[in-house]
Length: 195
Length: 334
Image (cartoon, rainbow over all chains, first blue to last red; front, side, top):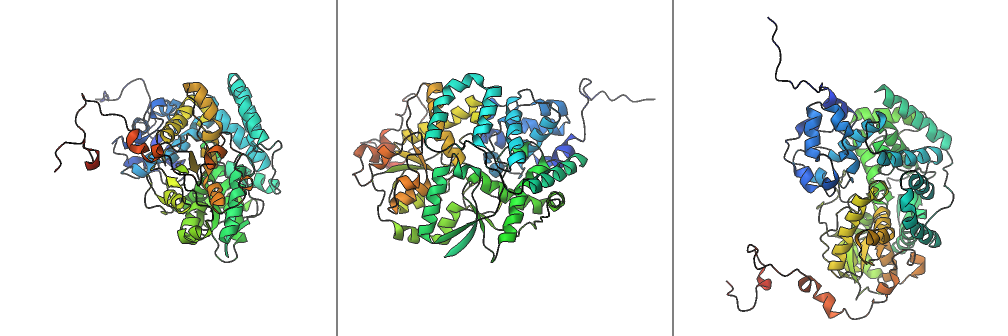
């Protein structure tokens, strides 16, 4: 006789190795499996209001294998990296770094719903890869033209003010050993894809 | 003379120029030699780590590798930008914590002929160096123009006291280091409750409503405590609160004019260095009118600020525990 498992909800197909996948992509040791669902993280979070799920809920989803929902959640993108939750977490979960890992995964699989945050990160990283330094003027100009064209009128006086006070570099700074940097970054990207 | 390796970070000659200018002068005065490491690259801020893990950490580690080569006698690597400091410290600590990441980073570095052994370089923030290596006595000895009459709200932001990978901070949420430094300069220091709350970081760029709300909380609170200005240790906090204050005012229909300067700028002013050379005047919300208060008597209202501006208790509300000195006159005291 074949036993049918009726305890599993039919719609979603949970990906049971998702927890491991997230941990593998976290910078330090994530300690995600240690989460006791106490909610200290969400209670400490200055931007929890803007999140689809509190960090606690998101971690429960990760453990339940709800990959698609977790990667579509705006929570990691709303994390401000203030590390309040990290120093308060009784289980020492590297919460902010888990959020970075989820951003990486969502960006690579294009699972995000709002293209603004990954768009900004993309432009920033592109400049750093090209010049070796970030370039505030180029970054904001390109980002605002693409995502916030309506905000530009409000921003113009600020940009002029910063320029007049010598706080905006017109041209990007370039490091000398750009080739060396490119070699390092492309090798790292290869390793990342293999992992 | 104590020698330190120095990682300036990209904002030091851009939006955070006043920080770079003032810290160079102040360190010279305090006898700290900052040797800028050669051909450093961007630390990736909070962006690269959210794009791809190994490249992000390899980018940071290139700086660590350069610093470990430049080291002649165990000098620490000093950063003054909180995000740069944290990225460098985190890379060093995570390469140890997850040897697999350490190996991957070194394979990548090897493609550029570099190598970094985690732990080889000690990474420190300028504020902590001034507090611990220089010491407040030495700071006091350099003060020629005490900041008496200037009411300041010390604002550390997040990334310096937290997550603190090297366990340098005794208190991660309400440390008093910046308070004590500003007191040593003679300033009237506000007990600023939001001193390590977040300025929103890059949120002004990706979710303006969230970012502006966080800025508003800080500026409201500083104003509530009648601070003349806020004082920061981080270029990101500075530009958010300084440059986005106008947009914040437009968003919330407020009229705040809260200047924010770097702690090194105030050190320079107290050391009698030229204000302009300290980058005073580079801020969009002008700090100069507030600096004119230096040397004048504190206004009575400012002294009473804490008590006078506390909201009146609501008679219908449940009784709250009260400090003794707050008890209304005539009420029996135990």
